[in-house]
Image (cartoon, rainbow, N blue to C red; front, side):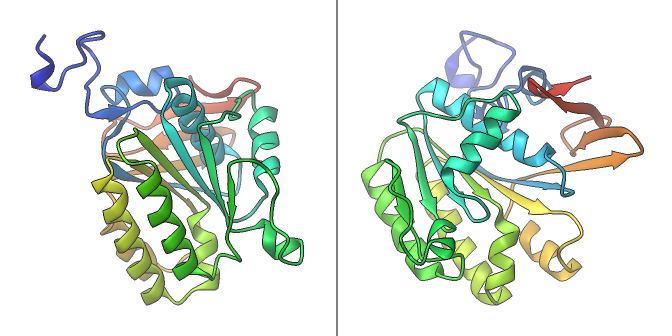
Length: 239
């Protein structure tokens, strides 16, 4: 197959305009992974599923030599890495960079001394975060890039909706111009319908984690049926 047709010549089943999810079965179902470049919305309840899917996405990027930019709002970088490890996913690497919107809020402004971390004063500091993103993109020009907002819902708690979506529109454009695939983690049941409808205008792919009794599914228009999943010691597995 010719690479000009958008086919991965090393694995003809998988498209080149995709970025691996980090879960092999999902990559096959999605012709290679999430669209690239794109903005991916991952909606789920308060359980670990959406976070672990993000960890797989990050780990796949680290393994592939991509640069991964993780924008954390609810836990410190060390806590996020520890959480990933507890689910069998290693997200440690020199090509993982952090825009840390959390540490300064719990350590009297000291922030994190961890290498690869740029401290933001808090999730309400959208202008500061926007500037930091612009600086990172300038420094990373030409590199293959993945971005995770974990979690985007936290920004909604600290910012007016209009301001937040102006910010998202601006940075989303920057990320796509840089060829990045960006994942937004969103808490199910936390937002009003107007917020979700506005958010969906900014995304390219939407995935929803559904929980029914003891069963869990990943739903999306890309799948013919809901995909049964479970989270265990090896992270997310497709059943």
